[in-house]
Length: 176
Image (cartoon, rainbow, N blue to C red; front, side):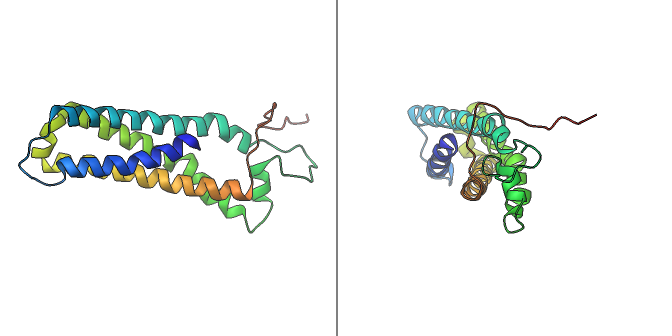
């Protein structure tokens, strides 16, 4: 959650800086120091986005979907089962976790694309309106995908907190 929150904060900074330097044709050249800053900033954002999504997918998500042993009445230690056990909260799993599992990957993919294009084209982005708009658009797509995933994560955690433990049981063995 920390990587995601920090990422959301950096998105607003990136959008403002990109718009300030390249949003409209001002005729003022962008200096090398500002260009270098934006390259490093966008690269750090891409790293934060990947850390947020990968840690969520491979560290937190296994605890979320831990399978409850048959006959378990107290589902507090099994967040997915807890959400699905109540009709009032089952939509948080079916909609919220689907977003977090699949669509949230747009955040690191789109910001990585924006960073790569900026690193390749640098200052010349200001003279290429379509490219400039694409970079700004992908920064905004990344921000929206991360923001909505963060919202769903907070709401899911409110209804079924994920508390890690020493053992993660993902599947029940069949009796055979």
